[in-house]
Amino acid sequence: MSFEEYAALARQLAEQRRAGEQHAATESARRRDLHAAVDYLQQRLTAQGHRLDQLGRSIRVDQPPAGSAPGSPAEAAGWPGPPSGSGSALGSGFGAGPVTAAGSGPSSAAGSGPSTAPPGAGDGGSDGAAGVPGRAGVGAYPELPAGEARLALPTAVSPAGVGVPAQRAAAVDPAVELELARRMADEADRHGQQAELLAQRPALLPTWSPLARAVAIYAASGAAAGVLVLALVLASGVGMVDGFTLGAWICAGLPAVAFFGGYLVLGRWGRPAMVTGTPPRYLPLGFLICFLLVPMAYCAYLLLVRGLR
Image 1 (tube, rainbow, N blue to C red):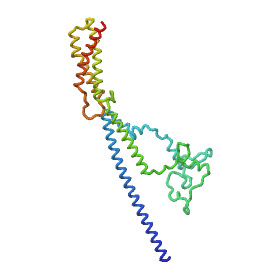
Image 2 (image 1 turned 180 degrees about the vertical axis):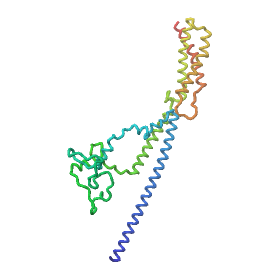
Image 3 (image 1 turned 30 degrees about the horizontal axis):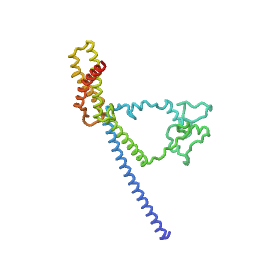
Image 4 (image 1 turned 120 degrees about the horizontal axis):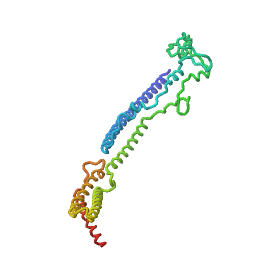
C-alpha cells in the first residue's frame, strides 16, 4: 500500500471520528434537553396536583380512598388472573415431554424409567453442549414432522385471533411523548382555570353581582314576611289575634325574621365555594329593606281594603 493510500485512509478515519464526536455531542445535547423538559413538566404537574388538592378542599370534595387508587393492590386483586392450567399449557409448548400426535400412543408415566428422549428434546433440564446444534460430535435437535412442529412451537395470543404472533411495539419517540404530555398539561391548566371561575360563583344567582343578589334575597325574605302579615291581618279580623300582637309582629317580629332569614340564605347559598375572605352580606341594606317592606305591605293591604270598600 502506497503512502497516498495510507494518507487517504487516515483522513477517512479522522473524518469518521469527527462525525462520531459530533453525533455524540448532538445526542448528549438532545438528552440534556429531554431531561430538562422532563424536569420542568414534572414540576408543572406537581404544582397542578397541589392546586387541584386545594380546589378540592375549597369545594369540600373528599379525597378518594387509598385502596381505590389506580394500580393499588385492591384494584389488582379485582382483575381476572390467568386460568389455573395456563402454566401447564405454556409448559407443554416448551417441551415438557416428547410431543406426540393425537392417537399415536400412550406416553410414558413419570418415574417409570430413564428418559429415552434424545438430548435437547425439551426434558426441562439443561442439556449443556448437547443443546447447541452444529457442534462436532454432539447430537443436534431432532427434526419433527410438520404437524408436530406446529404443535410444539409456542404462539402468542393476540386479540385478532388465536395463534397469530404478537406484533412488536413501535419505537416511541421521547420528544413526541413529551409534546403530548405538554399539550395535556395545557389542557389541564385550561380546565383548572374554568373550574376556579365556576368555584368563585355562588350557587344562588351565580351571574348576578353581589349587591343585586343581596337585594333580591332580602326583598324575597321581606315579601315572604309580607304574606305572613296578610295571614295575621286575616286572623285579627276573625278575632284570633289581638291588636297589640298584630302591631308587634308587623313592626318588629316579622321584619326581624325576614332579615335573619335573608342573612342565613346569603351565608349558605350566596357564598362562593372558593373565595378569599368573607363575602359582603350588606347588613344595613338588608335591615332597611326588611324593616320597610313588611310595614309597607301592611299599609298597602289597608289601602287596598279601603279602596275596595
